Length: 184
Image (cartoon, rainbow, N blue to C red):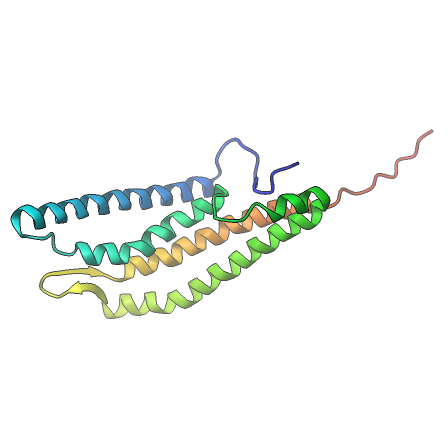
């Protein structure tokens, strides 16, 4: 049985592989930064009755940032949550159909990510033009547009990874042509 999740042979990483791995690293570093901020805030509240301003706001907006930093690499590494009950059974009996189902899921993912981009893009532009921010003026403010930009950029990177997967699965689902060689 072949693995439906394998998209390209192991070897030298592509530019896309390196780019989405870099995004994943940024997301991981952001999580580490949040842990440090939360610890400082907790320590400050407990021992000095002085919280670290802005931690609540940064944590709240960081969830989307982290998800969209790491989503493309999750797709690339085939670690997106899924049920592995139906596809192996289908692959044992109908390999081509199983691969087409996987391609269908990839195409649906591309459509969802495109909808996210279409919905977020106008809000990103508005956030930049109007200078929207998160937080409370005079205490802590954080610009809103970097989060929206990461949603757009992360969605675009995820589309590329889903497209690579879909093409790889589509190529594997093609039935090899019948050879008509003449034997003498």
